[in-house]
Length: 140
Image 1 (tube, rainbow, N blue to C red):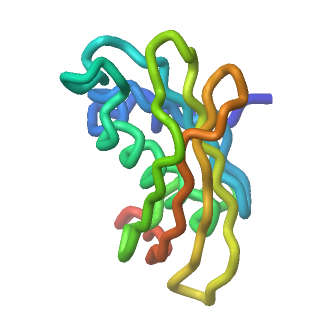
Image 2: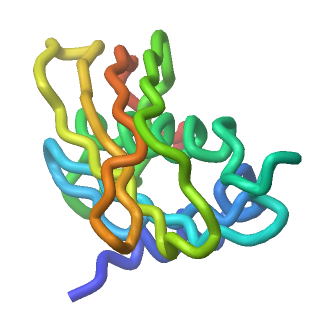
């Protein structure tokens, strides 16, 4: 069963929609986003721009510590710190990029996450760790 709240986030006219990042799973302690690489994601060297991948990791790592059960809204965490390591180049030919993140600790308002990007051939492309402030519910 698909969480309708994830569908709404993927349709929101913001950064994710503009860059092609899609939330594919969001649970307590887990966040997964995907990106189908296209020419607009490449740098002059013809590989996927590091900023596109950092965007994926930023979005994915902000999810695991901010999950709320329905009917509450899903609100991603706010990034306080993000550290990224690029381990291999990603290309359009490498296919779908997937960033998977897990919560590693934290308290009531701040949490820690780690994650990685792999391509469709299961090659490890990048890893990241981050510190995030838990997302807030919209004012009612």
